[in-house]
Length: 173
Image (tube, rainbow, N blue to C red; front, side, top):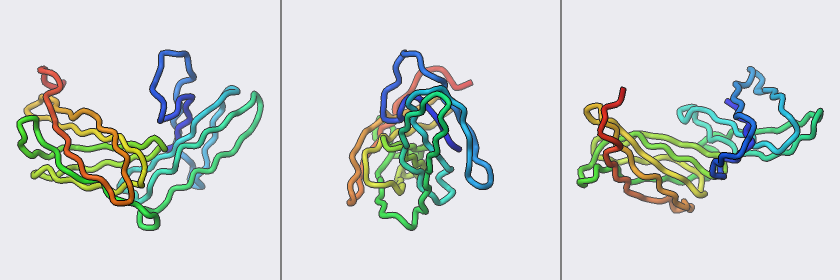
């Protein structure tokens, strides 16, 4: 899918008035058309992690009223890029290793996700850049979530531990 937004993925959302995010799926040739007012926009593309491709960096562009602009987003095969790994463990607050769903997003538009095993171990392929990582799971209907961690991942990769704590006392609907 392709996303056009007036707020960059690296910016914190504000209560200022902005144009709503537009999501579209490209046609078989990989093209998509958006109709927007004049302004500055951030274009992102994404494919599911299991596709074997890494998402392209977010593109910024300014458009004047009535102007036509073209942006090319290039998805790269995971096997063709110099990537590294983000690995570690997920544990409950008491230190017990646990399985969980993990997600990571970069300030350049990247996204990755995986699941840790029953011993809490995980490993996901990412590009060397700044990443925001989170984790969550449900136990007996109660949500558990780790605080988001921001980490600069270099070529040597990075290892971290995510602690999941109860996220409310009410079961999920």
